[in-house]
Length: 357
Image 1: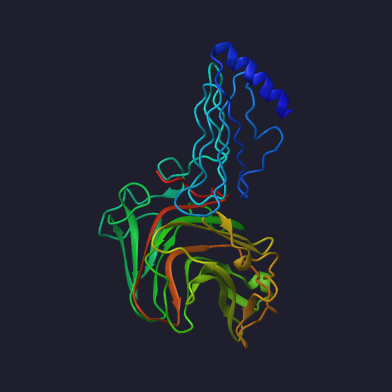
Image 2: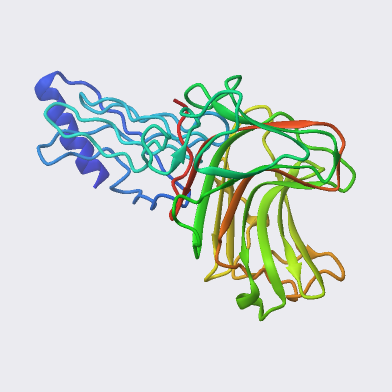
Protein backbone atom coordinates (compact mmCIF):
# COMPACT_ATOMS: atom_id res chain seq x y z
CA UNK A 1 0.00 0.00 0.00
CA UNK A 2 2.82 2.42 0.90
CA UNK A 3 4.60 1.75 -2.43
CA UNK A 4 1.33 2.34 -4.30
CA UNK A 5 0.73 5.66 -2.56
CA UNK A 6 4.27 6.89 -3.16
CA UNK A 7 4.19 5.89 -6.83
CA UNK A 8 0.92 7.72 -7.39
CA UNK A 9 2.23 10.71 -5.45
CA UNK A 10 5.27 10.97 -7.75
CA UNK A 11 3.06 10.86 -10.85
CA UNK A 12 0.89 13.64 -9.47
CA UNK A 13 3.84 15.85 -8.50
CA UNK A 14 5.55 15.55 -11.87
CA UNK A 15 2.39 16.81 -13.51
CA UNK A 16 2.86 20.11 -11.64
CA UNK A 17 6.63 20.40 -11.22
CA UNK A 18 8.24 17.14 -10.04
CA UNK A 19 8.64 18.13 -6.38
CA UNK A 20 10.03 15.33 -4.20
CA UNK A 21 7.57 14.14 -1.55
CA UNK A 22 9.01 13.14 1.81
CA UNK A 23 7.38 10.49 4.04
CA UNK A 24 7.36 11.27 7.77
CA UNK A 25 5.36 9.10 10.15
CA UNK A 26 4.16 10.40 13.50
CA UNK A 27 2.67 8.48 16.38
CA UNK A 28 0.68 9.64 19.43
CA UNK A 29 1.33 6.97 22.05
CA UNK A 30 -0.38 8.60 25.04
CA UNK A 31 -3.82 7.60 26.26
CA UNK A 32 -5.74 10.60 25.00
CA UNK A 33 -5.60 9.65 21.32
CA UNK A 34 -6.30 6.29 19.72
CA UNK A 35 -3.15 4.98 18.00
CA UNK A 36 -2.95 5.26 14.21
CA UNK A 37 -2.37 2.28 11.93
CA UNK A 38 1.28 2.26 10.87
CA UNK A 39 0.75 1.02 7.34
CA UNK A 40 -1.91 3.41 6.14
CA UNK A 41 -3.29 6.09 8.45
CA UNK A 42 0.02 7.55 9.68
CA UNK A 43 1.60 7.73 6.22
CA UNK A 44 1.02 10.61 3.83
CA UNK A 45 -2.31 9.76 2.25
CA UNK A 46 -4.29 11.36 -0.58
CA UNK A 47 -7.54 13.25 -0.06
CA UNK A 48 -10.52 12.40 -2.25
CA UNK A 49 -9.21 14.54 -5.10
CA UNK A 50 -5.70 13.05 -4.93
CA UNK A 51 -4.00 15.88 -3.04
CA UNK A 52 -1.74 14.82 -0.19
CA UNK A 53 -1.82 16.38 3.25
CA UNK A 54 1.17 16.88 5.51
CA UNK A 55 2.48 14.01 7.59
CA UNK A 56 2.34 13.70 11.36
CA UNK A 57 4.93 14.98 13.83
CA UNK A 58 8.02 13.24 15.11
CA UNK A 59 8.11 11.57 18.50
CA UNK A 60 9.56 13.58 21.40
CA UNK A 61 11.69 11.44 23.71
CA UNK A 62 11.70 13.77 26.69
CA UNK A 63 8.98 15.79 28.31
CA UNK A 64 10.00 19.42 28.27
CA UNK A 65 8.46 22.64 27.07
CA UNK A 66 8.26 21.39 23.51
CA UNK A 67 6.38 18.47 22.05
CA UNK A 68 7.30 16.51 18.91
CA UNK A 69 8.28 18.29 15.73
CA UNK A 70 5.69 19.00 13.08
CA UNK A 71 5.40 16.71 10.05
CA UNK A 72 6.90 17.55 6.67
CA UNK A 73 4.74 19.22 4.05
CA UNK A 74 3.45 16.96 1.28
CA UNK A 75 2.96 18.15 -2.32
CA UNK A 76 2.04 21.76 -1.71
CA UNK A 77 0.62 21.15 1.74
CA UNK A 78 1.94 22.87 4.84
CA UNK A 79 3.94 21.10 7.51
CA UNK A 80 2.21 19.40 10.44
CA UNK A 81 2.08 21.33 13.72
CA UNK A 82 4.19 20.67 16.78
CA UNK A 83 2.78 18.34 19.42
CA UNK A 84 1.34 19.79 22.66
CA UNK A 85 3.71 20.61 25.50
CA UNK A 86 4.97 17.55 27.37
CA UNK A 87 3.29 15.01 25.09
CA UNK A 88 5.27 11.88 24.22
CA UNK A 89 4.88 12.24 20.46
CA UNK A 90 3.68 14.57 17.75
CA UNK A 91 0.84 13.56 15.47
CA UNK A 92 -0.55 16.84 14.20
CA UNK A 93 -1.86 16.68 10.64
CA UNK A 94 -0.66 19.06 7.93
CA UNK A 95 -2.92 21.49 6.13
CA UNK A 96 -4.18 20.92 2.62
CA UNK A 97 -2.07 20.86 -0.54
CA UNK A 98 -3.33 22.10 -3.90
CA UNK A 99 -7.10 21.95 -3.93
CA UNK A 100 -7.14 19.48 -1.07
CA UNK A 101 -8.91 19.79 2.26
CA UNK A 102 -6.99 20.38 5.46
CA UNK A 103 -5.92 17.37 7.46
CA UNK A 104 -7.45 17.12 10.94
CA UNK A 105 -5.18 17.19 13.96
CA UNK A 106 -6.01 14.41 16.45
CA UNK A 107 -5.26 16.67 19.43
CA UNK A 108 -6.58 20.20 19.67
CA UNK A 109 -4.67 22.92 21.46
CA UNK A 110 -6.44 23.24 24.83
CA UNK A 111 -5.74 26.72 26.11
CA UNK A 112 -8.10 28.65 28.34
CA UNK A 113 -8.82 31.15 25.59
CA UNK A 114 -10.77 28.45 23.77
CA UNK A 115 -11.81 25.92 26.40
CA UNK A 116 -14.95 26.03 28.51
CA UNK A 117 -14.30 25.22 32.14
CA UNK A 118 -10.68 26.34 31.88
CA UNK A 119 -9.17 28.97 34.19
CA UNK A 120 -6.33 31.16 32.94
CA UNK A 121 -6.73 33.89 35.61
CA UNK A 122 -6.76 36.68 33.03
CA UNK A 123 -10.06 38.12 34.34
CA UNK A 124 -8.89 38.31 37.96
CA UNK A 125 -7.28 41.28 39.70
CA UNK A 126 -3.51 41.23 40.08
CA UNK A 127 -2.40 41.26 43.71
CA UNK A 128 -5.71 39.85 45.01
CA UNK A 129 -7.11 36.39 45.53
CA UNK A 130 -8.88 35.04 42.44
CA UNK A 131 -12.68 35.10 42.34
CA UNK A 132 -15.18 32.53 41.04
CA UNK A 133 -14.75 29.56 40.57
CA UNK A 134 -12.18 29.75 43.38
CA UNK A 135 -13.27 29.59 47.02
CA UNK A 136 -12.42 28.25 50.50
CA UNK A 137 -8.97 29.79 50.71
CA UNK A 138 -6.72 28.31 53.39
CA UNK A 139 -3.59 30.35 54.02
CA UNK A 140 -2.30 29.80 57.57
CA UNK A 141 1.11 29.00 56.13
CA UNK A 142 1.53 31.47 53.29
CA UNK A 143 -0.22 33.58 50.64
CA UNK A 144 -2.27 33.19 47.46
CA UNK A 145 -2.47 36.06 44.94
CA UNK A 146 -3.02 36.63 41.24
CA UNK A 147 0.41 37.47 39.84
CA UNK A 148 1.99 38.83 36.65
CA UNK A 149 5.60 37.80 37.25
CA UNK A 150 5.10 34.46 35.51
CA UNK A 151 2.38 32.95 33.29
CA UNK A 152 2.13 29.97 30.96
CA UNK A 153 -0.18 31.94 28.67
CA UNK A 154 -1.53 35.45 28.79
CA UNK A 155 -0.28 37.80 31.52
CA UNK A 156 -1.47 36.26 34.79
CA UNK A 157 -1.28 33.15 36.92
CA UNK A 158 -1.80 32.43 40.61
CA UNK A 159 1.24 32.60 42.87
CA UNK A 160 1.13 30.34 45.95
CA UNK A 161 3.80 30.85 48.60
CA UNK A 162 4.34 28.41 51.48
CA UNK A 163 6.59 29.65 54.28
CA UNK A 164 8.89 27.41 56.30
CA UNK A 165 7.26 25.67 59.23
CA UNK A 166 5.22 22.72 60.38
CA UNK A 167 2.30 21.29 58.36
CA UNK A 168 1.94 24.28 56.02
CA UNK A 169 -1.38 24.57 54.21
CA UNK A 170 -1.77 27.13 51.40
CA UNK A 171 -4.51 26.07 49.04
CA UNK A 172 -7.73 27.18 47.35
CA UNK A 173 -10.90 25.28 46.60
CA UNK A 174 -12.54 25.01 43.18
CA UNK A 175 -16.29 24.88 42.57
CA UNK A 176 -15.93 21.99 40.11
CA UNK A 177 -17.65 23.72 37.18
CA UNK A 178 -21.02 22.29 38.16
CA UNK A 179 -19.77 18.69 38.08
CA UNK A 180 -19.67 18.04 41.85
CA UNK A 181 -20.48 15.60 43.28
CA UNK A 182 -18.84 13.45 40.62
CA UNK A 183 -18.20 9.73 40.23
CA UNK A 184 -15.40 10.52 37.80
CA UNK A 185 -13.43 13.76 37.67
CA UNK A 186 -10.39 15.07 35.82
CA UNK A 187 -8.19 18.02 36.74
CA UNK A 188 -5.27 19.54 34.89
CA UNK A 189 -2.96 22.42 35.71
CA UNK A 190 0.16 23.99 34.33
CA UNK A 191 2.47 24.54 37.28
CA UNK A 192 5.87 26.14 37.89
CA UNK A 193 7.54 24.96 41.10
CA UNK A 194 10.61 26.96 42.10
CA UNK A 195 12.31 24.04 43.87
CA UNK A 196 11.34 20.73 45.43
CA UNK A 197 10.07 21.17 49.02
CA UNK A 198 12.55 19.79 51.56
CA UNK A 199 12.14 18.67 55.15
CA UNK A 200 12.52 15.68 57.48
CA UNK A 201 9.95 13.04 56.44
CA UNK A 202 8.13 15.72 54.45
CA UNK A 203 5.50 14.83 51.91
CA UNK A 204 3.13 17.23 50.23
CA UNK A 205 0.50 17.55 47.52
CA UNK A 206 -0.67 20.12 44.99
CA UNK A 207 -4.11 18.77 43.91
CA UNK A 208 -6.71 17.29 46.28
CA UNK A 209 -9.95 15.47 45.50
CA UNK A 210 -12.15 14.18 48.29
CA UNK A 211 -15.54 13.10 49.53
CA UNK A 212 -17.49 11.08 52.10
CA UNK A 213 -16.48 7.40 51.98
CA UNK A 214 -18.91 5.99 54.55
CA UNK A 215 -20.86 4.10 51.90
CA UNK A 216 -17.81 2.67 50.15
CA UNK A 217 -16.13 1.60 53.41
CA UNK A 218 -19.11 0.29 55.33
CA UNK A 219 -18.79 3.16 57.77
CA UNK A 220 -15.09 2.63 58.48
CA UNK A 221 -14.00 5.86 56.77
CA UNK A 222 -15.48 9.34 56.82
CA UNK A 223 -14.09 12.18 54.71
CA UNK A 224 -11.33 10.85 52.46
CA UNK A 225 -8.88 12.73 50.23
CA UNK A 226 -6.77 11.53 47.31
CA UNK A 227 -3.86 13.87 46.64
CA UNK A 228 -0.85 13.64 44.29
CA UNK A 229 2.33 15.58 45.00
CA UNK A 230 5.83 14.75 46.14
CA UNK A 231 8.19 13.72 48.92
CA UNK A 232 11.33 15.25 50.42
CA UNK A 233 13.39 13.29 47.89
CA UNK A 234 11.83 15.30 45.07
CA UNK A 235 10.00 12.31 43.60
CA UNK A 236 6.29 11.81 43.01
CA UNK A 237 3.94 10.69 45.78
CA UNK A 238 0.18 10.16 46.08
CA UNK A 239 -1.56 10.21 49.45
CA UNK A 240 -4.84 8.60 50.52
CA UNK A 241 -6.21 9.49 53.92
CA UNK A 242 -8.93 10.98 56.06
CA UNK A 243 -11.08 10.48 59.10
CA UNK A 244 -11.93 6.95 60.18
CA UNK A 245 -13.87 5.30 62.96
CA UNK A 246 -11.34 5.06 65.77
CA UNK A 247 -8.53 6.90 64.03
CA UNK A 248 -7.20 8.24 60.75
CA UNK A 249 -6.59 6.50 57.42
CA UNK A 250 -3.04 7.27 56.27
CA UNK A 251 -1.81 5.48 53.13
CA UNK A 252 0.45 6.41 50.22
CA UNK A 253 2.28 5.31 47.09
CA UNK A 254 5.80 6.57 46.47
CA UNK A 255 6.94 7.00 42.89
CA UNK A 256 10.36 7.20 41.26
CA UNK A 257 9.65 10.05 38.86
CA UNK A 258 11.45 13.31 39.65
CA UNK A 259 9.02 16.20 39.79
CA UNK A 260 9.88 19.03 37.38
CA UNK A 261 11.09 22.30 38.89
CA UNK A 262 12.15 25.63 37.44
CA UNK A 263 9.90 25.33 34.39
CA UNK A 264 6.29 24.96 33.38
CA UNK A 265 5.02 21.40 33.78
CA UNK A 266 1.68 19.76 33.06
CA UNK A 267 0.09 17.82 35.94
CA UNK A 268 -3.11 15.82 35.45
CA UNK A 269 -5.24 13.76 37.81
CA UNK A 270 -8.27 11.48 37.44
CA UNK A 271 -10.31 9.64 40.06
CA UNK A 272 -13.11 7.18 39.43
CA UNK A 273 -15.34 6.30 42.38
CA UNK A 274 -17.04 3.44 40.56
CA UNK A 275 -13.83 1.57 39.76
CA UNK A 276 -11.57 2.87 42.59
CA UNK A 277 -9.04 4.09 40.04
CA UNK A 278 -6.59 6.97 40.42
CA UNK A 279 -4.50 8.11 37.45
CA UNK A 280 -1.68 10.65 37.55
CA UNK A 281 0.12 12.10 34.52
CA UNK A 282 3.15 14.39 34.55
CA UNK A 283 3.96 16.15 31.28
CA UNK A 284 1.60 13.76 29.49
CA UNK A 285 3.29 10.61 30.82
CA UNK A 286 1.32 8.27 33.05
CA UNK A 287 2.96 7.86 36.46
CA UNK A 288 2.40 4.13 36.91
CA UNK A 289 3.83 3.85 40.40
CA UNK A 290 1.66 6.55 41.98
CA UNK A 291 -1.54 5.54 40.21
CA UNK A 292 -4.08 3.07 41.63
CA UNK A 293 -6.16 0.46 39.78
CA UNK A 294 -9.27 -1.09 41.32
CA UNK A 295 -8.30 0.21 44.75
CA UNK A 296 -4.96 -1.62 44.66
CA UNK A 297 -1.53 -0.01 44.56
CA UNK A 298 1.50 -1.42 42.76
CA UNK A 299 2.78 -4.34 44.89
CA UNK A 300 5.68 -3.28 47.07
CA UNK A 301 5.11 0.41 46.38
CA UNK A 302 1.99 1.31 48.34
CA UNK A 303 1.85 1.27 52.13
CA UNK A 304 -0.17 2.49 55.10
CA UNK A 305 1.15 3.88 58.36
CA UNK A 306 0.89 1.12 61.04
CA UNK A 307 -2.27 1.57 63.05
CA UNK A 308 -3.80 3.83 60.39
CA UNK A 309 -5.18 1.33 57.90
CA UNK A 310 -8.89 0.51 58.22
CA UNK A 311 -9.40 -0.89 54.70
CA UNK A 312 -6.64 -3.55 54.48
CA UNK A 313 -4.63 -1.34 52.17
CA UNK A 314 -7.42 -0.76 49.66
CA UNK A 315 -8.12 2.72 48.33
CA UNK A 316 -11.89 3.10 48.42
CA UNK A 317 -12.65 6.18 46.32
CA UNK A 318 -15.77 8.17 47.29
CA UNK A 319 -17.93 10.31 45.05
CA UNK A 320 -15.95 13.55 44.75
CA UNK A 321 -17.57 16.61 46.35
CA UNK A 322 -14.53 18.82 46.92
CA UNK A 323 -11.49 19.86 44.93
CA UNK A 324 -8.51 22.07 45.81
CA UNK A 325 -5.20 23.26 44.37
CA UNK A 326 -2.08 24.47 46.19
CA UNK A 327 0.36 23.34 48.87
CA UNK A 328 -0.64 20.88 51.61
CA UNK A 329 2.39 19.84 53.65
CA UNK A 330 2.73 16.99 56.13
CA UNK A 331 5.56 17.47 58.63
CA UNK A 332 8.00 20.38 58.57
CA UNK A 333 8.90 22.40 55.49
CA UNK A 334 12.52 23.46 55.89
CA UNK A 335 12.49 26.51 53.58
CA UNK A 336 9.80 28.49 51.80
CA UNK A 337 8.59 27.31 48.42
CA UNK A 338 6.56 28.95 45.65
CA UNK A 339 4.43 27.57 42.87
CA UNK A 340 2.61 29.34 40.07
CA UNK A 341 -0.57 27.75 38.66
CA UNK A 342 -2.09 28.50 35.27
CA UNK A 343 -4.37 26.91 32.66
CA UNK A 344 -6.46 24.89 35.13
CA UNK A 345 -9.07 22.58 33.58
CA UNK A 346 -11.71 20.68 35.57
CA UNK A 347 -14.01 18.36 33.63
CA UNK A 348 -15.51 14.97 33.00
CA UNK A 349 -12.93 13.85 30.44
CA UNK A 350 -9.21 14.20 29.88
CA UNK A 351 -8.02 17.09 27.74
CA UNK A 352 -4.27 16.50 27.90
CA UNK A 353 -1.57 19.16 27.93
CA UNK A 354 -1.62 22.44 25.98
CA UNK A 355 0.98 23.62 23.51
CA UNK A 356 3.03 26.61 24.56
CA UNK A 357 1.32 29.64 22.98
